[in-house]
Image (cartoon, rainbow, N blue to C red; front, side):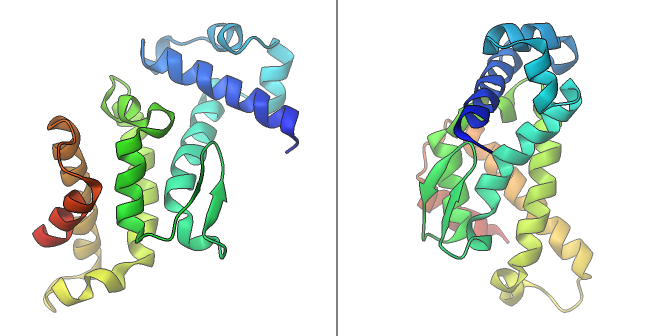
Length: 183
């Protein structure tokens, strides 16, 4: 994707994020998105087939960045964020959430949060599957793997919700420790 296409895509995402912070997804029109992005209708449709595709792509961009650190051999990633991190993946994830990159906290706690939490959980599941060895010492031999994986995901989601609800008073380092302690 060239620089111009990337800028247009970012403008669309920014307009979409702004609208999502004010109203429900099903109330947002493509017209409102293109007006906020200051682009033409044809430009919007050259990037996204529908508003639903925009949501899917937006979530993939948003969560792909957060979850793809270890996939990139140079530990760098560029989507709608930029960073270079060599931190453990769960600490890295909590730091991005604390920094509120691309207003992710508003999206995760907005009236549209079910849409975003579903995508977040899907990506979190993939991340946890690739890092199950981090949790192996805490797993009882009696637990089925699917139950254990679901427990880890639910614990992370509960930890994240508690942290957000309590105004993120704890540092990412502390909340990461809490997450691992309660497993």
